[in-house]
Image: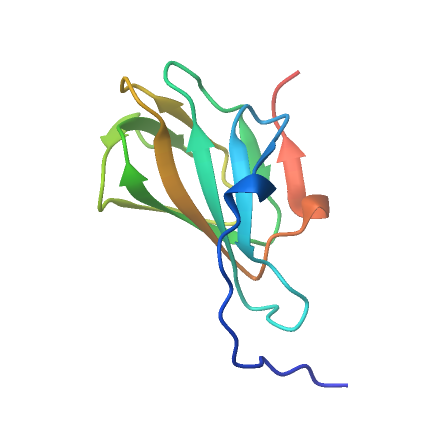
Length: 126
């Protein structure tokens, strides 16, 4: 049975934010079975916090930085500072983490294709 995306407006519910073991907070903006090609989440990392090393199996992820300053580490690339308007492209299976190096929350969109599934998440640290 083929799934089709239906026209709709999906509104962010700030009360739906939840903490993750990854050391950040997530609000799922769009992650639904009828739109399997992509998911979009808003991520928030508090000041002086580094997310855990992790990778996503078979999922390409993009961070679109909206607010704050981060130090992103992906694969073998040197740690790089990122800020509003920057896009970080993370290939499937690539190790990643981000540190909030600013004084306020680091906020970014995490856009995954295909859509994020918890079963694809791999912790890379103890």
